[in-house]
Amino acid sequence: MQSVVDPNADALWESVATISDEHGVTEKQPRTDEEWAAVRRNAIAVIEGANLLVMPGRHVVATGRKLEDSDVEGILKPEDIQKLIDSERTTLIERAHGLHSAGMAMLAAIDAKNPQALSEAGGALDEACENCHLKFWYPNQPVPGEPKK
Image (cartoon, rainbow, N blue to C red; front, side, top):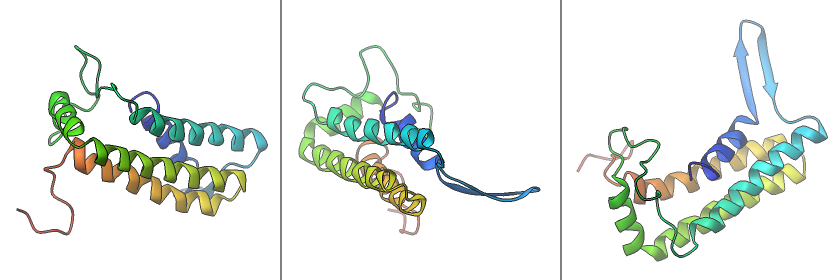
């Protein structure tokens, strides 16, 4: 997650934006073949990262390492995340397939060189990530708009 999915998902989300500042409004999007190729590599990495997530024997972190965001309140400890993943492997696989599908939608938008579709697919990518995180990373976090338990 930290080395493949997360940085490439961030690059995809940041590839299309509307920036409003003292200079006016700027539409950020890939424009050249090289820029589209770079964003395409990010989408491929997310898709392949989803495949890696379902490989048997994968661990949340290597032995002796800690999560990058382990100091964030509400994030479970790696061993607790691993227990959840191990006990609900079918759910992990379903969530990874959701990530894969979202990555494929990003790839289709990129291949069509359609910034609007790329932006819209970014929402599906965010939802796929959040669905997994809410289940395994921070399952006890309150969901905005829902009453507290």
